[in-house]
Image 1: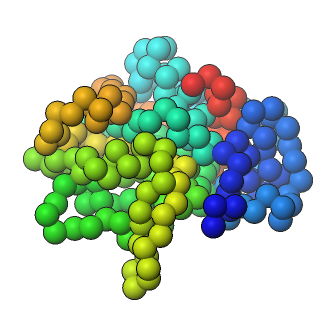
Image 2: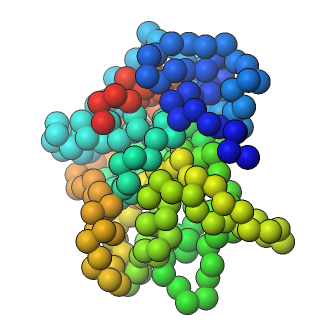
Length: 241
């Protein structure tokens, strides 16, 4: 099982395999043992100025936009050494969900949408069956929490820690695997912490999305389907994190 999707810096796209460290295009090969694939093609000369414009406008400052773009580059990889999860936080019409959905769309099966309940503390739920579906994923994204929610801190520590975690598929035996996913959330509300543990607090990275702009929503709808330009733009930021 550990042999599948092993190289954190190879990205399987529709027309080739990208070495994210060198930018080299490699031919598809079963030797790479990849189970995931982006739905878009890699075109080195492709650009997407609308994406850059919307991200810069909605994140308000060059510093925040650069940080976000670098984070998006990180999402293409299976590297989880940053030991963090990310929250795009803001009100309605701030573009946070559309921006996140655009990144998820170019990642294809590397991206998994999770339920809010997975990340919320509850005395009844055991989310380990959903975690089993994240094996090999590089982005796990979730939309919107509710006021009064509390983090499921043990799960978030496990996923963002980079160590093997326990998971179980329904009606199957438990197993362990090493997650390669980064967790990115888009929400009006940020759940609370039960413990105020510094080791947990250090993992929380908040990306403020404060600028309401329905025009940016209309612009992003033009690039919210899988787009080669967004992939190329994001790939250029892999080393900038």
